[in-house]
Amino acid sequence: MSTELARISDQPQALGSQLATAADNVARYLKLGLEGADNTVLAYSADLKSFGEYCEANGLCPLPADVATVARYAADLADIPRKLSTIKRHLAAIHKHHQLRGYPSPVHSEELALVLEGITRALGKRQKQAPAFTVDELKESIRRLDVTTTAGLRDRALLLLGFAGAFRRSELVALNVEHLEFTERALIVHLPKSKTNQAGEAEDKAVFYASTASFCPVRCTRAWVQQLGRSTGPLFVSLKRGKVKGEALPTQKRLSALRVNGLVQLHLNHDEEGHKIPEKNYSAHSLRVSFITVSVLRGQSNRFIKNQTKQKTDAMIDRYSRLDDVVSFNAAQNLGL
Image (tube, rainbow, N blue to C red; front, side, top):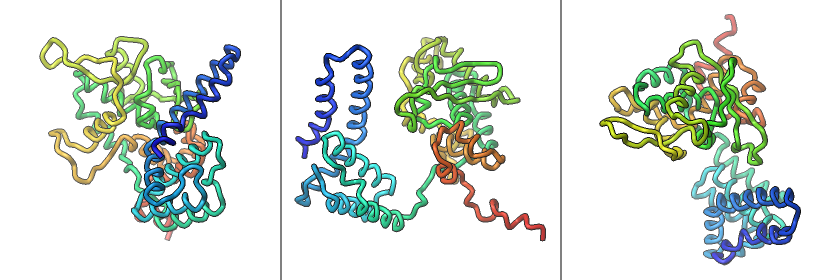
């Protein structure tokens, strides 16, 4: 199986050689397509390795795999148990592997769909989600920041922009200064790519001014850009020590997604003395979940919410909005009795 894994990307490269003498515009688009295929291979490599080792241990054929093999693999993952989203990701990797190698995919069969439906029922459709914080909790975290420091300015912009823009952490770390357009009405963020926009089509988010300057995502982001002192390059970057004691200077190195998550946890889950608050378990994804939850509670339409989150369906809004408290969110309390 290790040999097969090493050859996963042979298919797109072979296609590239066939069009090596193509016109310049064809070659340009081909290059982007090949980059996408290579990225897919990298993203799925760990899952494919897992599937390959499973097949090797059980005397099964990984490529081309039959429906029974994939169904057995999915069932065993469920028995571990793995999360439903993890199982679906493994199946997507197997599907893409077969697709790139020119084999019919066993993943989209009716039989496997029934097995997956059974797994879904067994594991339960409700998966653990990042909790949503309130606007008051966010403001309290902002108040604790020392915005006379470079780190404070950066982290304030990160929290406010992340929340007001309903950003994924992968989107935050990918932002460049040149993606920002400050206008009189709002800050327009031009997204290069996102989880639901892998093709890099034009996609914008609008972030609006707030009445209080210290909680305004637009003003605070502008303050951070001014601190950066440049008009291009990564927006959220790591810091290095300056020549003056206690001084921190921005680098050109992007924050990692892991670091963004750590900063959100630091500021939202800890008190002013740095002690962890036991009942708080917010993460970077809470920025996005909280935007959706707050918007739903304020009566915003799903259409308006999706215009910011860029989600394709209402289903994800229902999943992310944390309205499952049977006492706080219940129509029975307003029956007029």
